[in-house]
Length: 207
Image (cartoon, rainbow, N blue to C red; front, top):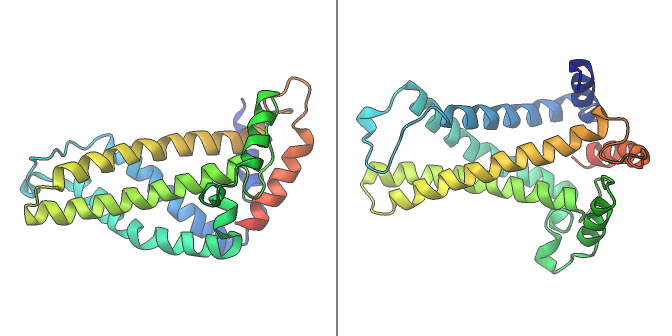
């Protein structure tokens, strides 16, 4: 995998977005990645006192509080354009498109991004995990400051949700880039070539 192909894949993925949307996506994505990286170097436990927090700990807390304000706005804008049925079809008991995409994966072909499909569902779950992570982190901080007995449980929940977000970023982002940085995705017969262009068009037009 050459660096040029990776760069081209990232540029193509966001090429259909207006500048404001690119900045909005880039801001949240950068903040989340930095949160994940910073959390790897933090050593906060249920019995850690605020007086023991270092600069990195406070950075993580402040950015997390900021994400709690940004993420609901981001999700609101996204759901206004795409509705809950696109990202959360399972809420209405709709699994037909998801089953079709899973069947497509079983044939070693990457399914395109489409309404109520597997990729859209994974994106919706990732955004939900991000919102819950920001919320649980904020509730932990408030509970910790007030000496609440629930603070330890909220901290554990927050850490588990971070793991889900990491999985989402690696999985969803990896499959998206796979459409662009390989000639035929995971298909040995280039069966992804037609779905790649369709993925790009549908993904960027709906963001």
